[in-house]
Length: 261
Image 1 (cartoon, one colour):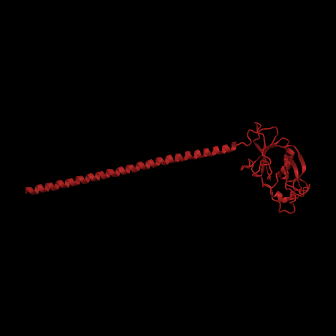
Image 2: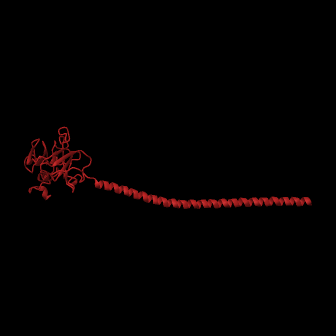
Image 3: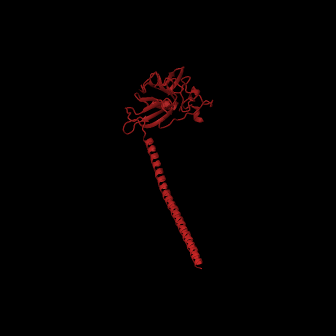
């Protein structure tokens, strides 16, 4: 009987121990779960903060990008051509051999030729200055002008203004001293290298130089990708119009058939 009580007591102790052990495990599991939940909550909160920080960072980045873009735009806007170049004449001329464009500049308030005034499409050639025949880059017009000028290949140009030597501003060639004998196929080449060395222009542009450019006006020749602040104008293609093509479309002569087109 005594042994039975001892055995029952031992069994009870074991059961109690098992219960206590199980409880401890449950408690530890619960604490672990709570800890995990807390960690997850902290991560979510942290992510929210990071999202907020990322949004701020993105805003700052965009602002910086806009600032950089504005700076670039301002730098472009502030770019000045011919800065530091001045003279007594009202105009300064740049002839870009590579792009076949002429840009006329006037003076700014400080007296420098930085104000773009007029752009003209042109045709240059192998002997246009800044080559072996004329090593210098800038010339002053001589003031010599001819309403009609005899040119190489037995042709004539309207409104010729001498730059240096045989290098002139003038119109596209004519077969005779007759405004209705334009070499129309040469007119269609404006904007490309097509002359021997002179600077060919539309009649309108050649006449403007003839009327406005005085002796001593500086003319700079260059070969650059930059066509200038006013870009490169276009010229009408005329070869397909058999009725009008013997006339320069820009010529203000009263008999010009282009006026009725």
